[in-house]
Image (cartoon, rainbow, N blue to C red; front, side, top):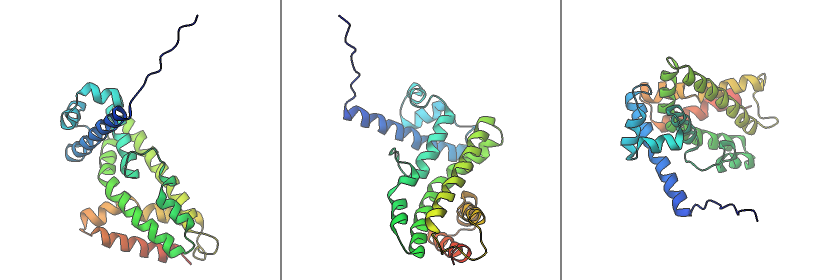
Length: 213
């Protein structure tokens, strides 16, 4: 008779412990990447800050680059739930909202929260890309992914009749991509000292003036 294959069983408690360990590694990596830079941060330092062994980090992520990549994803989403950004509840709220100004309100509020989380990590990514070809590829991929996400959000924001006269959707996507970029956020909030509320208001007012009919 064929030998029965034993299925590996993972209890909910074990899965939650694994998620907690993964979050601890990402939190530690974020602090160290921002404080020291990507190149100066070692896997051993991340492990020490997270209070796990380096082997645990390698088992969960395999490489330091993978840690940075997942940190980007979690920073954008706001958590580690396996739900794509464009399937998040606030995006669905935009889809369901008939008023373009209210759709812009939802986009502005959530866009600012994303920028608060991602901007410091993005600066780490941009700095590391100058010296590391693998990180350069990650950086270029992130920018392409962000543009595509902004293009989809624009399609939700701008419904028939609400685009400013004379403006193409391609140009509108470029405007949204630029105004809502981590670079713009860092310049105004970190360099010029704007509050998050100031940025939020400027973001919405600028997009309303430049994009909406």
